[in-house]
Length: 361
Image (cartoon, one colour):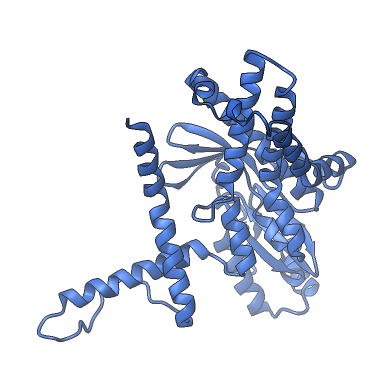
């Protein structure tokens, strides 16, 4: 950081202490999370307080002036800092995150739910410890009348828009459970909003900071909270439906089955839903999905290249821009990545074909 240059923090920056001298940094403009140490945080705080270069060097005795300059450049690239006087783009609320997938941020979860309030404690206890017993009780009450729940006419009599609205409301409550449990554990939830698939909106909650919790049990609570909320809603609907008749019973049974199906779908590990992140945490393999697809791509690339060799001579040069693997892994791990990657690739097409086979008479 030269004498002439001054910097300030970018808008929409979320910094929270996570213990053990570490801080979580969420850069809204880039939709990315970072973890920094106490020393790096002191540098950011010095810039935030508009200190002079001499003050910053004095407040960061563990860094030389050259290291401070280098850290400043890193923070600029991360989007944490911007040059003083530079025009900063207005914080976006609409982001493209994949093919026909978009995120629309509506509100910060940290302002919506205060950390460790008594309301959060009560709600977290209900979601985590009463959901499965309530669902079990609901299923037990219908043990002698299972045909009433599974009859197709029950679900065909509801109009399409009813399922559209009901599914949206269920996803909102699903994400609300994620927010409640995560905030009760003192973790930052930088944004809540809508995830738009094509034209269909569903709710989303950014609980990526939950991976910084030191205890796996707490991380599992954050990840399973949404599924447990669906179990709770399904169980309550089954119990209430047992005491009603007519249209009220039909609506509650449809709601119960939709919640149970959504809970089961979220436990599938071949798509980036709650079950996938649970599996990733249990295996301790970051970016499991991406690494597995990379192994599949490399396997088929190697297989295909055998067919394009000429005169039994191996290809000696690769096309510019091809990503070179930097990590050596055991053969057993490579086999696991290939199998898992193939299952992830085939999961959606197989589910679509199964649905078509069921619908076509």
